[in-house]
Amino acid sequence: MDTPFTTRVETGAETAVIHLHGEINVQAEAALNAAYAEAEALAPPKITLDFHEVSYINSTGIALIVGLLARARAAHLPLAAVGLSPHYREIFTITRLSDFMELA
Image (cartoon, rainbow, N blue to C red; front, side, top):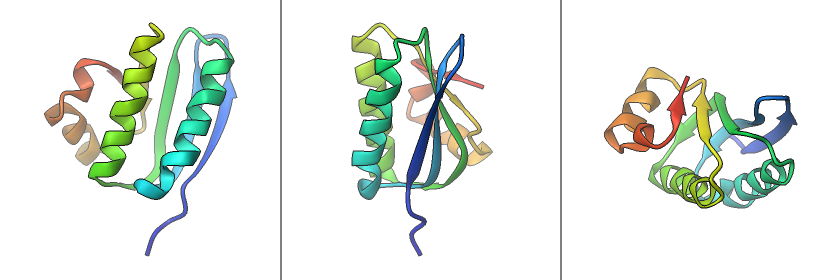
């Protein structure tokens, strides 16, 4: 059963954090893009994606994250990821996402 995808954006001195909750798949696209735009509008020095509450990411979800990474790189804005499970950390390494974003 799909877990509905939700986001919450908060800002601090060092980063804007996009808290992600649920499954990152095609249904997450609009909410993910809106949260990224909200975070980017805050003009932070970095954007951090918080995956602690993410239950599943499919290949479309990985593509959505690649899209956010492309937007961040075009804006010369570092993108980081926190809270990845060991499985998704390995996927980020295999797909080389970890070459372009900090994994904490």
